[in-house]
Length: 304
Figure (tube, one colour):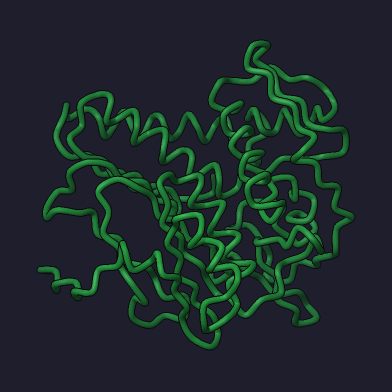
């Protein structure tokens, strides 16, 4: 999924952390669009056909469809042609700073994807390509934390490229503390405390590149235009019940959370019952729900 992962297991069998690592590697092998042998790559190569895939991949696609539906299309996992046209056609580390980007003729199709659990198949519409992107990271964290809990862990934290899911007892204290990075390089704009839940961030601070004509592009695509979202937002962080849902809603917060005051996007997230913090060029905005999770005490200095 083009990211590093961090796993913390509290209690349970000492082998659980290694088991979690193997599970993440297996999910990567199923879902990465950068691996030609992955199930996602097979789906994209055979768009228009019914393709037999694992239960995990069917769940991934179903969650992406659900995210598209409840966000009214603001989240769409079928913007892959636009992502590639913007230059993100390989792992980010391999992108040339001078890559030439072009607008894509985007053919979206989330609402037309077929998932049949009885037959074990997924069918993408002809001409449509699926990119698990961030939702894959969030769902992977959800699956691994659930499995660690079922196997006897007292607590677990799985962080896949900044999409984080926690459950149960932390190594110390009463809650899992999650500090939000400032994309501007300053002090953290906030921290949250959770016993069971997820945090995800969408940001243009890292995965961005500039074309020879000086135009900056990034990997977060505006579904309406099919190009890198033109927004003053630098990063958006969401706290939700599950990692895949937090990731979907972080994308929406990034696209719509452009005001220093509470914007319509942040109000909508309040109504959904999720916390949101948006960092943009003019400052930081938080919705009311964020206060439920926010920790005000500063982090104690760590011993060297």
